[in-house]
Length: 140
Image (tube, rainbow, N blue to C red; front, side, top):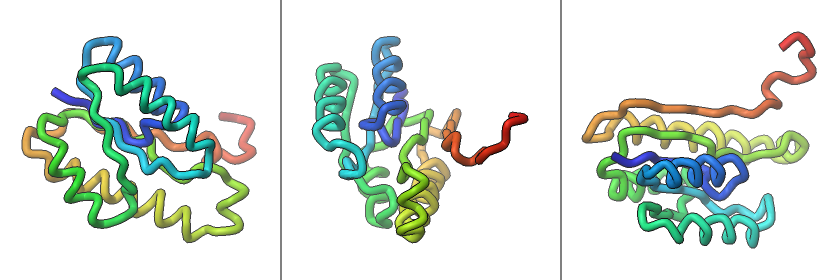
């Protein structure tokens, strides 16, 4: 049984995948390796994870519709999904809101469609949003 971790080259995705691999899980990691954060850091994270024999990496842009077929082709055995892929950064969303809709909404739809069609059956989906969704609310 495999765990799909989207956004695997990001800070949280890398640490989640590393913990899963240390626990003996098989991990299929997906990331688009965008240049929003330092690509060398992302590559170093993927290289570290690639040292595990139970890690497979796919460079995919989940917001691209054709990525669903590529992901389906590699998702045999996936029973759990941890969806962490997203376009980060609130300030940039004010400059280019369409980039956020494409990455975060269309990308999320791709993950949901994959989950809906998993042949072995999905046991669990975890979707982590951003602390930014809470805004300035100090009561939470």
